[in-house]
Length: 593
Ligand SMILES: Nc1ncnc2c1ncn2[C@@H]1O[C@H](COP(=O)(O)OP(=O)(O)OP(=O)(O)O)[C@@H](O)[C@H]1O
Ligand SMILES: [Mg+2]
Image 1 (cartoon, protein in one colour):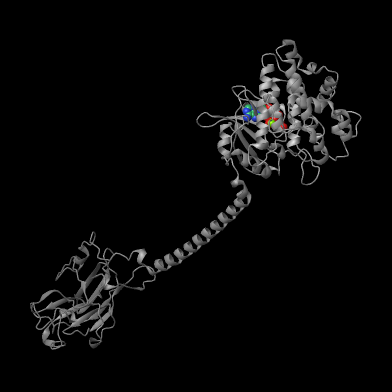
Image 2 (spheres, rainbow, N blue to C red):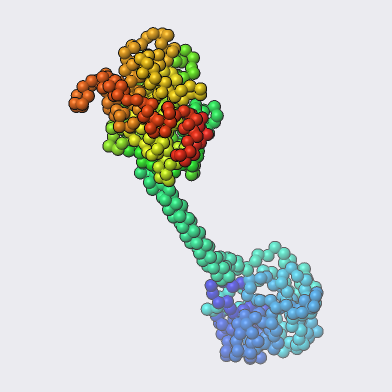
């Protein structure tokens, strides 16, 4: 018996012996198709049935809705039992079988010597030795001479299918029933409800899904929180950084252009760190200055250069951008200058590389324009703070270009007060810087004066065993031998104008004058370099004579001794050992970079 999906199963099936093929008044939808209420229990029926009943009719004293019974002329079974079988093995207990499960069962009905046995088992199992029903019956009043035998059943609103897959009957040979082949029969068991429909699954899935959603929400909250934190941290760090021009570059990109800051790309080493050559996509060459030590002047530096960076000036080394990775790792990206720095072509270099007199004058002029531009060319005044030959670079056309403007702010050479840093390079720093620690346009002019002198003389401002450059040139001027200050290698060539040399030496000396007020402005300096008179300045008719007049009225040595309380110009050692200024000197500074 096989149930239908989504319908209540019923009613059942009967194996019958009957004298006629149609029992009078039976209904196909009721009472197993066996009797009706008028003929039920009538002994004239001559009907024997073995019912397999799946509906419990109380009016017929059914024991339950899954039983096997023997009916004689009546729907009230003479004997009945739960459907099932007595097991032969194990504890020999009774095993119930659900009739309308769709499972295939085999039933044996034997009648011999007034005893009727009804036995059932799942197909494929051996016939159980103990019958389900075993009853003594006298059927002589029931059976007629000729009887029909077969099956009857009914389905009404309760629907199921009743299938006889095979059967045999014998009057004589009871053991024939064992010959029935029951293998390979189709199964009518309804496919089990998919796990997806099971309550357990639905409940588990709901709880699981809820938990997963909770975890995802939590995770999202954590991620959002972390992102916000990072964002906040980033903003804390970069709010001000983002304002400044030139804009940030991607650290990793710069790192890649310098082959990961490889040694073969190093083009110079300065006080801040190494300088690397790099090639951007598109073949543009750059110089990357990697500043590794911690510096708190970074912000001031960027503020200063960002105001300037918007304008380009042909005598400044272009600052292309910058980037910062962690604290203490800062990159400045400059245009690459093919011919390196000025110092390498003035001091200790061979003849081939050495700059000619004209080149030197031209480069000094270039640098003059650059400093003037820094001081006056832009709405904000920018101080260079570290003008010197090694910060003058030469491009491919040998133009002088001033680099590292403002960068001296980031040097941590020493401190005078907690807010004012002493910046610059020894030998180039104006004397008042030592006193006040403060840079000004006049301190830049001083450095420019030193630059003029060092480039013309081919001699560094401070050299071991020699008197300081300014003092030496001054003395030559006093002796009227200023032309002897000119680089000997240029002098021997003789390709120079003595008058021009003197004029420039005067300019250098005046710029490097100890008293700041006496020093000319950068505009005046540039005018002298260009050989122009400043029309607007009524005080000064002629710059050359003005210079001379200024110089002659001064005694530089007494000025210096006033500043330093020394008998003469301070020596390298004097500056280094100075205790009254409580300076801390880094190695590089003492070594006179
Ligand atoms: N833009 C550039 N193009 C080509 N070479 C450069 C460039 N910038 C720097 N260099 C090279 O790197 C060297 C080191 O430069 P850096 O500015 O770091 O040191 P410095 O000028 O000697 O001292 P300081 O740290 O006081 O500036 C220079 O002397 C120069 O040879
Ligand atoms: Mg430099």
